Amino acid sequence: MTDPIDTLPFGVGDIVETTKGARFWGEVAVLYRVPAAGTNGPRAEWRADVRAVDPGFLGTIHVYPLTQLQLRPARPPIVQALLAAGWNACRKSLYAVCEDIQEKAAKPATSIARTADEQAHERGFYRGESSAATHIARAFSALDAMDDDNLRTALAKSLGDADAG
Image (cartoon, rainbow, N blue to C red):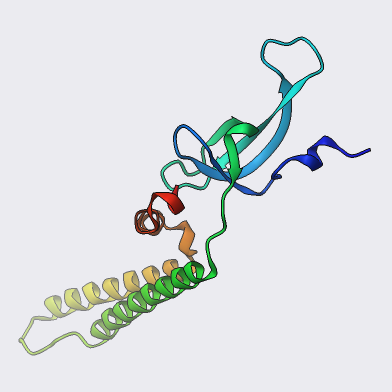
């Protein structure tokens, strides 16, 4: 005998979007059945808990009847490639800025005569600036593109309502 869940149009882990009402899209977290409204019999309706992937609702869980959901079309490979290329370009630019700061910190300007205290203060300032640049570069390296709220918001705007939710 076939399990009724095998006949559903999508499963746990699939990305779905609403078909009516407020635009919302996310990943199906749970599928379950509940008694149909107004019935005492064995008839049941399927529901889905959908965890938002949409930047505007990220992380929230909404409950929908399956009749209000459909599979969300996958982004074309070209969009994925452009996303990766843009992220890597940003990463390289950030690294270049951080390297420039570190180089300047290694050779502070000494054209003006300064007291020993002023020179120590200047070295401390550049050392701190260099340390900050190193930490920023390391943090950005560890950050996945889709973890960045600003990038997700920019993508949602640039891809338009039809694709971004």
